[in-house]
Image (cartoon, rainbow, N blue to C red; front, top):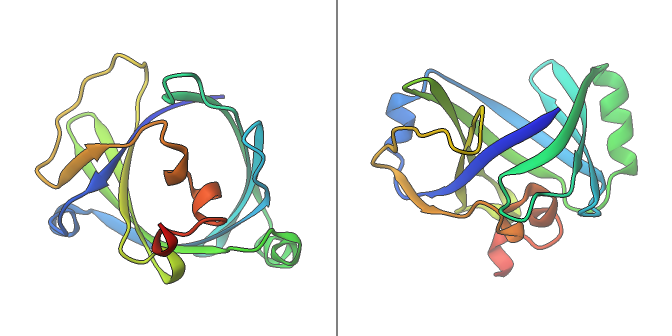
Length: 155
């Protein structure tokens, strides 16, 4: 139940040509406390409730628990979410043994595109595509929970 991931800004749309899948995501937050973020997410016909703990000092690792829930129940729970629902398209790009998840944000966060890669260990190495920019791992302002409260357009 530990998530190890690195996060990067994306510098071009070239990842779209390399993507093997993409889908729409709608997500809201029932709690944005950095000690225990509670996220509600709908992707297509599936919905998930996710709880994330505080990040490690280097920002690479944190506790994550996720459970699939009924989509109709998730839609109803959006009524309880804090202000700032996030909408984005997620693109999946395989590189070596790993898959990058690239999120292209809309609405209040339009113009922001972020790539994440989940690793098995903090010391895993991976091939960095040309479209990958500055690493922002551990920079809290790039957490979705924070983007819901302080959108990219307001930076």
